[in-house]
Length: 286
Ligand code: AMP
Image 1 (cartoon, rainbow, N blue to C red):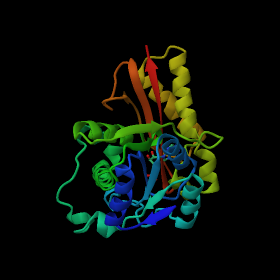
Image 2: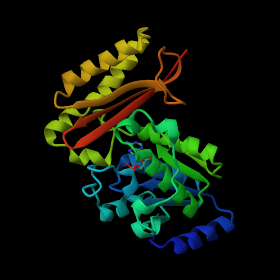
Image 3: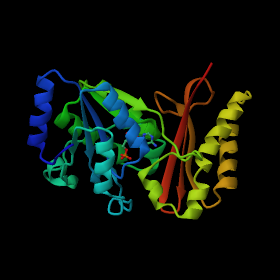
Image 4: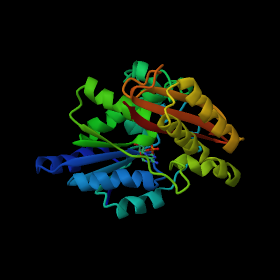
């Protein structure tokens, strides 16, 4: 695998492949790779001639008091994961290349608007603006045919899909299912923050989603009762957890639904110790 830090060098290498008619898949990450990232890399490998992965802990998507400085990093292990997945090129941009005038001095941003107004966007103001802006930069630098994203970060995926459509980026978006631990916990780099006790409580998020799906399965159509059922599971199975939100929204607009109908997204975020865990389930209700 080639490791490239310089943007001109990246453009030269990827440009040569593009000119030769080869397809390019991009998997953007913040590193500390796990099997969730691996599933994106595997899909990119199956679909494309060239797989480009990026690792960049993007400062503009962290709010004040969030974990930018302590975000887990292990480049040596990431290198091994990427190699094993058959990645062709690892792009490791510097903060100075991504934000030439400094992250705080970025004048033009990609604003996701109402799609960033609720769910994680409500408790992380500016987060999705940072995500949309950095992914725009990465798309402009790599110019891939396909962008690979994970369903675990469903609001991010919805915003980036919409960004690609609204701003006419010449790229396809593929969203891959959430990869989980055997006990249901969605894999996340931030799971590294959990103490053994918190780790034992963390599968409560998936259990709450399963509870909601089971309630829908037996005919429940009342959103408030669904949310109450999920809260009960979190209180019971994750007593140290603090619920940020449990929301039922339209899968396309991310706006709250009053009646359970059509493509619905059930999403939640729970603070557990130093970690903020998120999970979601999508369901079509006829
Ligand atoms: P991150 O490094 O956390 O920014 O994630 C990079 C990409 O991997 C994003 O598109 C995530 O949605 C995706 N991803 C993270 N965790 C998972 C998971 N458990 N399953 C599938 N995709 C994931």
